[in-house]
Image 1 (cartoon, rainbow, N blue to C red):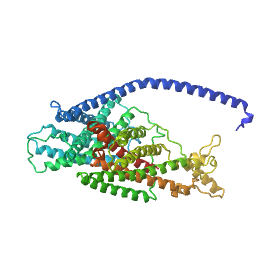
Image 2 (cartoon, one colour; image 1 turned 180 degrees about the horizontal axis):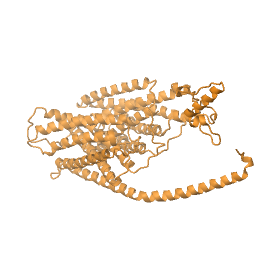
Image 3 (cartoon, rainbow, N blue to C red; image 1 turned 180 degrees about the vertical axis):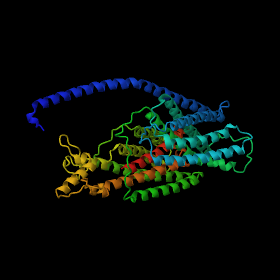
Image 4 (tube, helix red, strand yellow; image 1 turned 60 degrees about the vertical axis):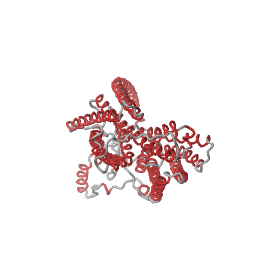
Length: 589
């Protein structure tokens, strides 16, 4: 061996070689970046073309929906359903081609994006798909009852939709995490076609549900003496041949919320798959986050279940009391008071969670993750609907001359809606982007210079210049060392079981329950229950924005109805998406 202070020539030669290596690395990096940028042009063009294709599909469907909503005599519901049915058949053909192609390439290893989705999300989507299948069964029953006077499209559509739903659930379970590297251009068009087909199905469900609530609102206004409002509902001209047609019709509207959420969630997951096409996976960051232990859960679930039970009671009372003129104002006031209490609790909960994060000062995870980025964008995008609705309500309350008993509670409720969503978005996004504390603490607690000559330490790395045969080939080294020691009359033995090796990592901190972690888990569970509560109320008919009359007086019936038809579906999606994001926060915190 040669000490560095006596080997000047070797040190100078090593420094020059290091400079040459750095120069070569820079040249190689420039060449590789220029080559990759040249290779990105076809990929970018395919991405832009497929995006334009999907956007135009959505616009064609939207044009047909607007014509159907206006009850144009030349554009009927059968035309819209025929167009959507053709899109579903094309998606079924693409999914079959994709699945058969992957089955032929069983030997080829397909890259997976572990962050694309989780098992519990796919399980939840399977339950939503099951509710959609029940809705299709009711639609088929409705068609059988009126088949003598309705179009055959009304019978074909639910059959194709049920087949599409089952095939799509299979695709979500086994192929949604795939990172496509072959036939990239064709697969881009196939995936984006699936994305916008589900978006069209979502829009169709939203339009049907909005029409149903609007007709109910018009019926209530007519019963209270408001004239010049007619209910737009076209029934078949013939009589039903079965005795359950009315049950099928009324049950459909209770299943629409599940079908709507199913399609919007599937389109979001397929969009992540579309973003992953041709992507180079960073294997260092493409590792599944392990769920932490659920210890000390008591306060969060109890308060959350209390909020959920109260929500169901409020829903039942509101629906029964809003129909009559005498109890209408008390029902609306009850809703706003309950909403104020619930939103105040949610604001305090998110504020406490953000305060705990400020105390921890854990750095954010900046690795590329399309699924996490889409979650953040969807949270902001879907918040716009309820923010617009809230600010319209604030303007209406401050500008009206009427003084119903719920005027100022409506104002407080609207302000809290804006504040709660701002704080919850910040809490969820910061939770998703934070690094896990356990991983960082373990890295910090590892010894910086482990013993080089220790045979019993499994953490000792090889050392340049000194050959540690016991580390490099432990089995062989143990045999030779034991034989040599026995000849010399010394017996030390070699470690046989990894469990016997003492690890320097602090186990007390890992095993002992973390108070901050317990608080954050309880906060996440409570927020999950509260968001479910705020989804249940508007999804099943508790919509005081239709019934309080303040906004309608300020903006007019047509404008305010248009605002609600835009804002309420986005608000419903926001609540359900927040439930999914908060459950992921609960697992990772």
